[in-house]
Length: 233
Image 1: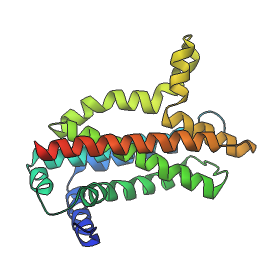
Image 2 (image 1 turned 180 degrees about the vertical axis):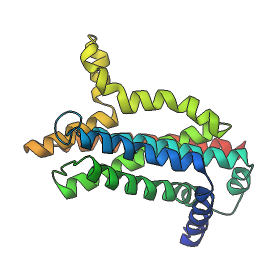
Image 3 (image 1 turned 90 degrees about the vertical axis):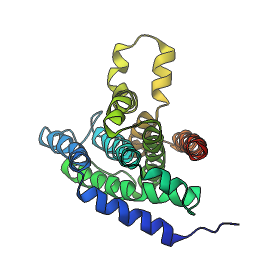
């Protein structure tokens, strides 16, 4: 029975760290949410409907997009196959491949909070929501990377993801179909924004946490299934 090894996870993390320093596309992508947060900070959008956007934008861009690009780059260089066939277990590879993206996303989120003057309503609950958001979007990013053949293809596949998960809430007022609006409200980005607003006003956020946990579980399961299929292929 294969045991979990932090040495293997650390080896994958260090390899990704070295690759990141030479990847201009990823570094520029990581900077985008910070520029957006700085702009919102300048116009004084630290409160109200726009307040949560820098954080959700950071999760979508720095989490999903960067993760997808890093996984797809492995495929482009033909190094992912070697990783899939290595002694490392599924969890070791998925955690190792997500660790750097997760750390970078947390750095971008912290920077976005300060640049946008976002008020964190409750640190413990906010931390839980960010962890769930990270799991969701890193899993989605890994999935995109596994389904893409090149880094450029992740941009094409990722555009609908960015629109749906990052910007759909902006268009709710223009949509008259209640079913579509309800579906948008259940998206992770909308659940996060609703949860943070509820924390600010003292409302219960247990329902939001359950929805986010369901999203996280579904995203991880789907990613593992696709990963194992790619491994057998």
